[in-house]
Length: 181
Image 1 (cartoon, rainbow, N blue to C red):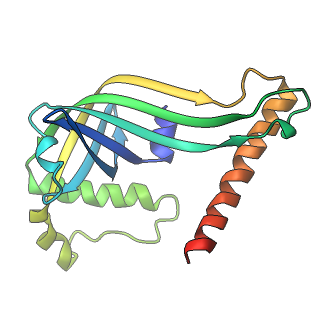
Image 2: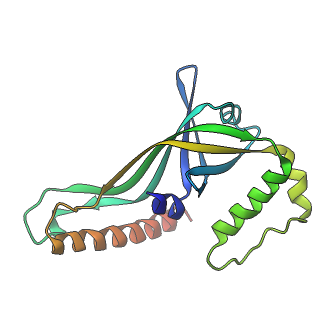
Image 3: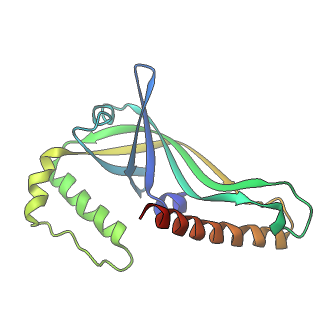
C-alpha cells in the first residue's frame, strides 16, 4: 500500500462538514506512517485540515476493464484496479519555515528520479506564496487496500490480465489526450 501511495501520490481527500463531503485532490507525501500535504488557504477544505479532524483519503493506482477474451480459460468480464483507502487525523503545521522546507522536499520527491527541476529556497516567488498555503500532517489511523488483479486465476491468465492492465492504461491515456488536445 505504501508503494501505491508513493507511486500515485495524488489523493482524493475527503472531509465532512455539516454532513456533506468536502473533496479536494492533493498530492501527499508519505513519511513514516504520516502524510504531508499543502493546500491553498482559499480552498474551502483548508479550514477542515486542522484541529485533529478526521479525514478519509483515496489513492488510485491503475485500473481497466478486463475482457474474457484475454484469458485462456472461460471467464466473465471484470474490472481490475488498485485502490488504497486511509483514515487519519489532521494536524495543521503553522511554521512557515517547515512549510517552505516541505514544499522543497515535495518538489524533490515529485521530480525523482531525474530531478530536472530543483526548487531553490531563494526563489523570489516562494516566500511570497507562503502566506497563501497551509501545511498539514495526517497521522494514518486506518489502512485498507484493494488489489483486484485477477489473482484468483491460473498463472497464465494472471499474466495476461497484468499485460492488459498496462496496455489498456497506456492506450486510454493516449486516446484521451488525443481527443482533448
